[in-house]
Image (cartoon, rainbow, N blue to C red; front, side, top):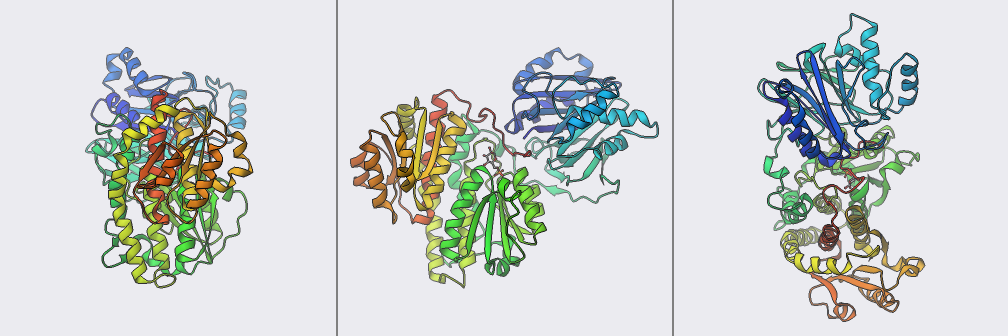
Length: 615
Ligand code: G6P
């Protein structure tokens, strides 16, 4: 949420910043801006809208600013103040010698702003972020012994809330000051040049060596190196991490949208999640990231899984899996609720945090609550080195590769595969036999090939989307393992096509949603073979008799369902616990095509952003 880039080195900063901002646009696209520093001059260019709009506007920059080798850039997801040119970052102080960009929320901005206004400061935006630049200015001017670093550090001591900031000043023109609390920042290490970003995506094309800043740290980055200190001014030793992903993973690779590319990557992603962790022939599972804690995990009285959005839907499937296989009681909570409701968890419990980005503010806060209460905290994250991954005691990476599409797809399937393996690991030696585990693993290993077959139905699914593109509402119904998939299908549709959609357990339809059904209401049923199949058929009949328009996901060869509707998407069969990994794919494609047919930008759905680092 909000993307930050910075560059200091020997090359022209402008193209590096623009390219970096494009790579970060999934974090926000309400406005974009950058500040370039050359000698005693800072130039700021910023405007409402996308990075490509900003790029076009940079033609007006004078030659000496185009030659600047230091700069910072920002792409905004609006919190305080509407998307506009004035509210775009960077912000300058009145004497235009300090520029600042910020990701996060300054919770006490109102009182700070009043104080600064009473001291004569003039604000040009409605944002919370602008207080930071004036605060640094005031502190720096109040004491001639201070430098930019100490003025920034002192200013941050007055700030409540979350921040990831980059600050430059023409009074100290060979450095960038960065600091983080709650909003991620990474330094990329080049040769005589350094890159700063909210995540590794803009850095990967320049270097694979990175340092992750931790909460409460501030760094001074120059052309010769970087020093990281705590906010209390104590030097911190940092580990350089090597990134293991390449440029092709963050490009579209011939697909029209990142979302479509990521949907089509799912068979490969499933293999990557399993790679080195399962041996289906021998019935073995080894989850290295939790092996040391496996016995404690198995003894848990109670597991709570906390997540947000799509990850929360994966968590719900995790509950079904762990309870069925490992017979451990599982509760699933929205991280945003868990953190504020004084949950009952203690030292005998396990709290699992699921997050694609590993940075979602509410999930991170839930992690802190769980830690305070003494629970064993475990993470399932996609982004390597992310805050949640680093702050949990143990955990596993999903290895889905960078997910750029704002609407999550491949991260979801990776999370579900991970939870399936976790559930089997927790049952090993306790609730299910070795032979049963081997059987489940063999079935799991067949999933990528089945998923590929579903992707071949893309053309048919687009045809269905064409018939339903004008709908204003849609209902998604599923039961058991496919109830969370119904929720996820509805979320995908509303996120990217702006069609109002709701997911329900199919049996609950008669307790409310049935009142909505008429000839204009598409009802999407997940009607694969499991113990509730016959009941689902009855639900389809109930919808048909009220003239609802039925779309069904059914197993290949199912004559019953094709008797009830002509819009059937036939998918390969699987056991019920594995079915979400297959049933979700047609729903992702249905949402994708409905959205593109309606002219929506699926990679940048309005008002949404990836990596939600604010509450
Ligand atoms: C945002 C994204 C969703 C994502 C959710 C949780 O809302 O748009 O796609 O599911 O955040 O993100 P996380 O990174 O914690 O999985």
